Length: 151
Image (cartoon, rainbow, N blue to C red; front, top):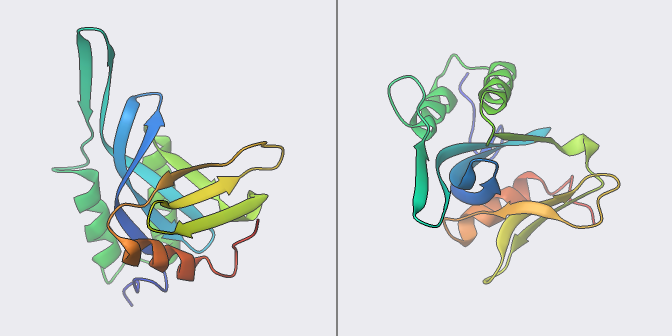
């Protein structure tokens, strides 16, 4: 049985964060017990030197491969989780955050701030990233993680 959007997972196709690779554009896949941020491209540099990194999986962009995996009727939640974790660990810009290990989790859906923000135990400030694509994406994340949101 195929995975169901907004029930088994939630997807934001564009998000930006600063990583060791530079300013990185990627996407977020939310799963019931974690969320995974994967890079698409990064730009870094100083002065007149700039480095542009484009990430590829198989024959194309990572987002296309992940979309195909999520749409595959043979994919199980455990397979998807394991594959996404493996993809994130294979790049310095990837990120996996287990929601059970967080001290706080917040999804902002406002006009000026739409994003997924979290605190790990012992953190003094919030970490996170914006959820681009409009209010519907942020609201989908808020509904998906509604039972796990905590300040």
